[in-house]
Image (cartoon, rainbow, N blue to C red; front, top):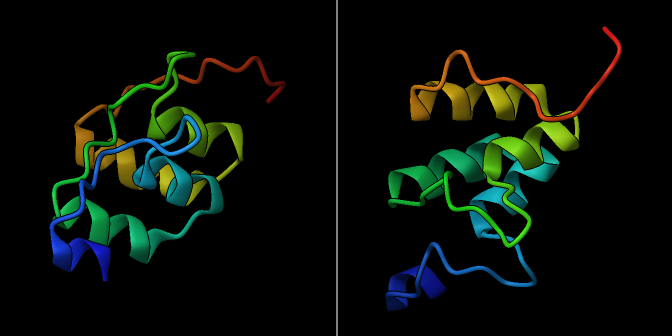
Length: 84
């Protein structure tokens, strides 16, 4: 596996980090694994989006809650204007 070969866990590929990519699909186990290995969910892409924003954008509420808890941003607010 790439991580066993000391691959960079926070590197962006096509404007998204591995933790953000996992957040878009709600892959909670992958996210937890990456976080345990030191993935930084607060790295922003050139548009200013981080893993929390991606989880929110793709309506991955469980992923968003995991990230909010992990980052301590329990009062984090969506940047997307959605009707409740």
